[in-house]
Length: 178
Image (cartoon, rainbow, N blue to C red):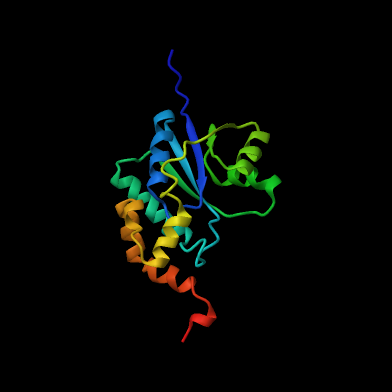
């Protein structure tokens, strides 16, 4: 008899911005699971050089990308930081649909979910020499080609919100203002 239990995975990230490495990881997770919950971490932060995009903007980046890729078996859940690590998993559980397995390479996230008896799996790092949010944001600030490292819908959202102008302005100091 075949099991009818759905296997749902959980993945958390800041997705500042959602890049091709994230997309590849989502696709790999979905090869092993029926659906995925994508937690948009640090949802309360935006308009800084480290977190330039709002949770809503990141939601758009991810949902438009997955729609274009014909991926529909996902949930997007903004998750604010709680600044109390011992409470964080309970916070996630209160916000997200139930899930069976957590995918992360973050040592703290791994530890917190393991302590709550979740199965935690590692993720392969995909083209980390180019596909990191930090490197992509640096390229945006410097005016270098960043577009090749993110899905086309992400480029469209960033242009729509004038994200390049935002991150460049945020990267300046008061001494840079004429």
